[in-house]
Image (cartoon, rainbow, N blue to C red):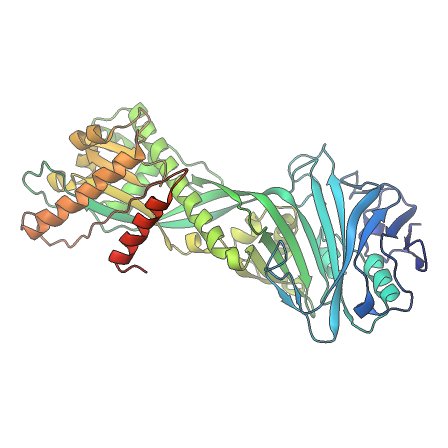
Length: 507
C-alpha cells in the first residue's frame, strides 16, 4: 500500500495514505513511500495567511502510468508549493491567463510537480500524455480552495492526499468542486472539423481591355471543406471542477509564445481532397455556369490531366494557407483570454460518444469536440469558430475576366496562380500571368510583384468603370490589399507608415 510523507525537516512531518482517486494511488507503478520535502520551514500551528511558499524536493523516483511507465518524477527539486488570494491565473503575472476570481476569506493552495514523459511513447499512446511530446518535461499542478483560517498542515495534507492527474473522466469525477488540475508542456493538439470559407470574387480589368464580355461569375458562395488542423507549441490543459456534475476543460496558450498552425483541406472528415473535385468545388462557388465533369472541363480548357492535377494541388495549397492564416489570426486575437479552446461539460448528460470525445480530448485529440456537437458539451471558446461559421474568406482574383466573361474561358486562355504568402488565388490572362511570373507548379515567383499587379488592376478597373467602358450591371466590387515585410526596419519606415495612416484618417 502506498503512503506519502511531507516534511520540512524541522517542525512539520506528515504521513498519510493517498485517497482512492489520487494519481499517487491510481497511477503509481511502484507502491511504496512517496517522500516530499519542503525547502522552507513551516509553523505547524500556522494558518494559510502564514504559509511560506516553498520548493518541493522528491526523495526517490516516482513512476506513473495506466499500464506501463508514462511519467517519471525524478529525485531532487521538482516542484513548488504556493498560496494565492485575490486572483488565480492573473495574466499580468502568470504564464497562462483566463483568471479565476478567489472569494474573500479564501485562498488557493497549489502544488506543482515536474515529471518527464517516457521517450518510448508514440504520439498520444499514453493516458498521461495529453498530446505532449514523448521525452519532454510536463508540469502537473493541483489547486485546492480553502478558508484562509485553515491550518497549513491540514491544507498540505488534503492537497497531496487527493492530488489528481485528469487523464480520464473518472479522475475528473473524483475531483471536489472548486479544485483545478493542470498539465503544462510542449506538444500538439489536433482535430478534424468542417470549415466554411466564403469565396470572395474580385473581378479585375487589365490594360488590354477589349470588348467587354458578359460576366458569368457570382459574388462568391461558401466552400464547405473538411480541415485537418494541428496546433504545436506550449500549452496547458486545465480542468476546473464546478458544482454538481459540471466541469470546465480548457487548452490555454502560453503568454508570449505562439502556436504553430498547419491546416490541410479535405473533401470530408476522412477523404483527402485532390484531383478535379477541388476545382469543381471552387468553380461552383464563383462561377455562374460551373463545370462539374472533369472530361468536359478538360475539353473546354484544353488542359491535360497533369495540368489539372497541378492546378488542383495549387488551389489546395492556397486553401490550406488561408485556413492556417485564419487560425493564426484567431490565436492572436485570443491573446487576452489565453484559451484556444474551452468547454463546459456536464458529466451526467454525456452519452457514450460524448464521453469518448472528452476522453480523446484529454489525450490531445479534439476531433470529437470540434468536429461534432454532443449533448452535455458546450463550446465556450474555439479558435475554429470563425471558420466553422463561415466568417473567413478565400480571395479569388480574376485578372482579365472582363475580356472573357467566364471563369473557364479565363482559365483556358490564362493561368491560375497562388500567392504562397496569403493563400489568395489569382486567375489571370496569359499576358498578365507572364508579367507576374510563376513557377511550374502554379505559384507566384514573387508574391510582392503579384500584389503590385493586383493593385494596378484595381486602379484600372476603377478608371474603366468611371469612363463607362465597364457596365455597372452586374454590380461587382473589386479590391486589394498589399503589405511590405522588413526583417530589420528603421525609424524612417515607421514614421512613413504612421504618416500614411494619419493621412488616411485610419487612427
